[in-house]
Amino acid sequence: MMVALVGAALLANRQLAGILEYALYWVLTFPILVYTVRYGMRNALIVSFCMLAISFMLSLPTTIFYLAESLIVGIAYGEGVRKKWPNARLLWITGVITLFSYIITTIVFAQLFGYDPMEDVKLLTDMLNAFHIGGVAIGELVMAISVLSAVLLSVLQTICIHMIAHVLMKRLHISMFPLKSAYDIKAPKCIGYICIVIWLLFFISNMVKLNESIQTWIIVIWLIMMMVSIAYGAMTMMTMFALQGKKNRIFLVAVLVFVPFINIGISFLGIFDICCAFRQKLKRGVANGTIRKL
Image (cartoon, rainbow, N blue to C red; front, top):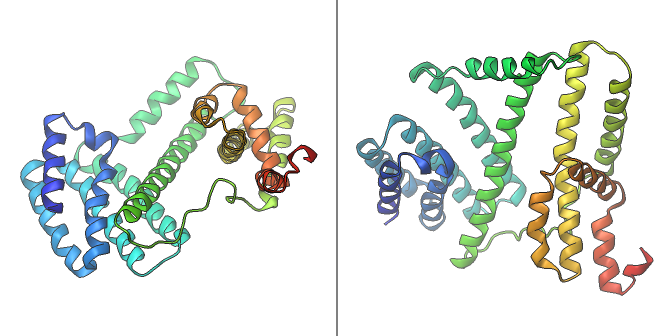
């Protein structure tokens, strides 16, 4: 049945001109993941071979590679569930394999299919140069943003696989370590203080003339800090809406994080949350009836 599901997905992908391959290829992880949890890695390897065999009949070489990466993730995750690995280990393994696949995809596709990522980098560099942006090394900035994009996509894909896997395991009555709620996810306070220092460096770099390479890497570090702080700020806003019983506004947060200037406010809220454990205080305040004292 699992082989048939993958075969149907591959056939649909071919009929839809590869939409599944480019947007949601990671959904092919779940059939082999469920099978591995049920019957173990040894049996799953046989089923994986059958899935790859059918992909040679229905798919292009790029799709075969994506399927192989999904099978590796599914087998590793499923075996981890069988062995009762904690969620952190499952996330790390899935994330590393996913990021490695992005790197291999770029290298392999560049060699086998004539895809040259440096041409894309050059095109984006020329576009930015057309705006006459000064004070930064455009080439270094574009390369750094490309790497950050791959890492961010890997993280998002890992989170999607992890959360959907938990839903599937719950439906199949297979025990796993429970997911942490939005109230309990927290970072060390030192991360918040580092974010404050990075903000100060970013403001100073805009007022003082620095070397182009130094200015570029300050911007790159600032972008990384923004992604982290916005994520915690978004969780804080969602927590506040949930505690107020306004759950219909939670989806609004996903839009606000992309709105200029508003996302900066969300970033400051995230830094405040990291430094002061604001969400945990909100949770305790609601539980003890002392929310107004905050």
